[in-house]
Length: 152
Image 1: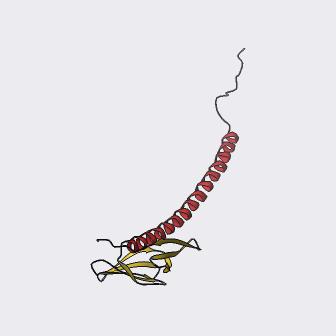
Image 2 (image 1 turned 90 degrees about the vertical axis):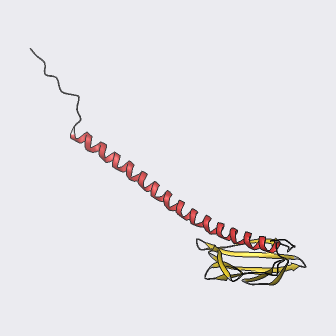
Image 3 (image 1 turned 180 degrees about the vertical axis):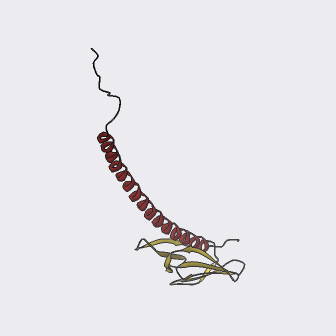
């Protein structure tokens, strides 16, 4: 007599449905983790860009003070520098941007700037502060510079 052998090479419908359910749960978890990671990456990138803009503004202010013959006016949100050639370079804030004006031409140096100030600490030394906002948090960067004669 012949024996009837059960075909054990395939999967039952119940096994396939169970495997798909487990796969769906695992994939949903992975998609959730990736979504959160992208949100965090975007927030960190935005904060880094805001800090970079403020650092750039501070670097421009510091460089121009160091290369100036003298500081004509310094205060809250306004700076006027004199070059060796007699030309004047001005800085001011407009609509959240640090603007540099030279020979009548204006250029935005940095965006996302709430304010800046240049204060005389002692003869020949100025403290420069740039205030920015990043993700709702206000931060301040500071530097110090002394004007000196330069040929530019």
